[in-house]
Length: 423
Length: 198
Image (spheres, helix red, strand yellow):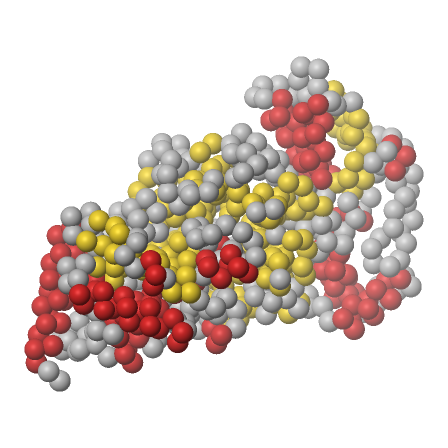
């Protein structure tokens, strides 16, 4: 029962095509345990992580209506697939007469690895991994908790079914910020500014947001405590104030200001003090994000007429380019909480959600969409997908490339975009 | 070096500092940077490139090469009346993903400058916009560059920078709906809104 764990441990090993092919060949011959085994294994894991991992087959039975759909949705965007009993590696049975009850058991499994070789499946005796019942809150909340319990039990990693997102809801002339469950349900309007409001960003670990509002005519950054509703105008320098991004420890805020004549990356303390200009280009920078260790700020720029991702030390210094080989015009980077990946939007005709190792390298396009934001599990992304003239939010499980649209807020004429995952 | 121009600039600087000191609220919690001078929004009325210390220099186009020309403080013309029609014909259009004013669009900025010369009490707000073929915050930055680029041209034409406000709407305010080049080319633009005192 080990093989499903490999995609949970992506590594940052460089991945040259020749070595990858060699690795796959060696794996296929069952010769992976050579002297360079650490390196080769990590290479195959890297390849597996990005859209090539097979989902974990689970048979879901006994649930109905909303609970059944919540379980299938949640498990799909965390790397599972609902299959018939005879194909199931795990079996989830239960009921939702009144409250949700669920029992997770081992199923039988025969599966192949992605690395070219065949791992013989074992027929496991049916054994119960857990049996739980839930009460309180809503039936949806109970189903989300069950999904998270399943994911934690099987993968050892916390699920994301009880997390929240913030995003922009655009109804034409104006837009507002909303928060909702990660699947778009239970939306609540945060702003009622009746103007353009955009670029929400959660404060890590807190029920609070930064966002950009044009309430006073120009784009200013506001901070809002979502518990008290209290907000303040955090940054209203001359020109543009937008794209706030809070450091992982919550002590600093990166943002884009144009106060000296062109959009540049700035950083300041959470109280607005100690402002520091980190880039001084004539071109436009956009969309800063933080490395999880809080040392780097990654952003998009067009330094030397070439659109690329860069990172700059929070203490200042020269920006360092982050190569994204194979794709064009990257923007909107988001660094995974585990530090290993940067998700971003590439623009090649349409928009593509891509992932690249955090130090740069070959980028992997995954699905059409833009503005990705990592979930706390460092494997699921929320992003905006164009649907006709509008945008819907969608959730992508990066290893399996399974995606599902979130529930849309404000009807089919509205665009939902710029998601930020609370983490 | 003309002494009158120099003293005008000093007066302008003093006037703007006074106005901004009188009207601008400080952003909540923002503290002054020790040793790095001015960081409050009101202080951005001083142009980038102008020596704000001992000697104030007249505007020189070469000053805007690196950092650009600092935008006006937020709310510089709060309460002024908006006229979106007077300069409607002068909307400046841009190439895809570019913020440089094309030479073919230059005559429109000459017209805007002439209008401001003929209407000495008026100001203008340059609104930078983008088509939808860029990501949202990328476009917000690009629209800002487009607005600031036109402002720099106007200042080079002799317009007092304090009379030219800027704002970016990114892709949030398309002029025309539609998802093809005929719509996109009309959405990559700077609109000029005439502002008149209340």
